[in-house]
Structure formats: structure tokens, C-alpha cells
Image (tube, rainbow, N blue to C red; front, top):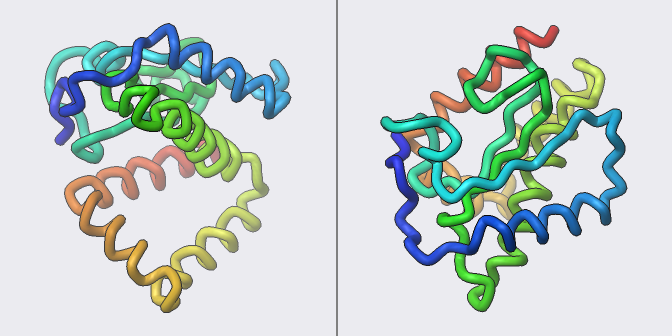
Length: 167
């Protein structure tokens, strides 16, 4: 379960993260047809309200697909990328690069994957799953499994259900 407030107290100012996100999106040339928006809040609580939330212990961002009512952070059926400003390192410690990395991951890995036809998406995911045992990815796989052990099942189940709801 996610704590209400991320452990990094310094973080980055919400306004600065919004500027970085806007510049990043302009660089991607994201059209209005994508129905994609980026929201930046100071803490997880600012997105979801009080209480524990499923997910990794130190979440930087998340993606909520445009399924009205499927998630408390989705409003009006928008594809929403959420960024948690307080979880980011300060800008002097690489915060801008971390914002861009988080946006790249949320937009390409989550939103972008859902743009593929179902059979191509399944094929790509099957290849990714099979690559877990490749020597060059073994350390990364172990790190992900260790860092996300308490949330992999929850996120895997949530992702599966959301994909099923869309199809």
C-alpha cells in the first residue's frame, strides 16, 4: 500500500513540474485527439484523498485511461498522466530529467501501448515477458520484482481488468 505522502519531503514545486511537463508534451507534438492530459499534484493524497493506495511505496507518476468511472483520478473520460511533485528529487538533483523519464514511461508504456491493436499489444507484451530471462535483462527484472513485489499483483490485475473493460 502506498503511504499518503511520499518519503521525499523536498520534491519539486508543482508549478515547475507543470512547466517541464508542458515543454515535454510540446516536444512530442501531442494532439488534442489524444485526449491526453497531465496533472501535477504535490502528494498522492492530493490525487486520491486520504488513506492507503495500491502501488509501489514511492510512486512518481501514474496513468489512468479514459474509462469514465474506472478510477477516481479520471474525470470526463480523459487519458490522465499524474505526476507526484513531492516524490521527485529536487531540480538540482536531477528532478527535470526524472519528470521527463516519468512522463516518457507513463505516456509511451501505458498510453502508447493501448494504441496498438489488441493482437499486436499481446504479442509485444508476450515478448517482453519472455525477455525476463535474457541475461542482459536479468538484473533489471530482479530489481523490478524486488521494488514492486507488494504491488505487481495488484497492478497486473488492475491492468488486466482495464484492458478487458476497454475491449
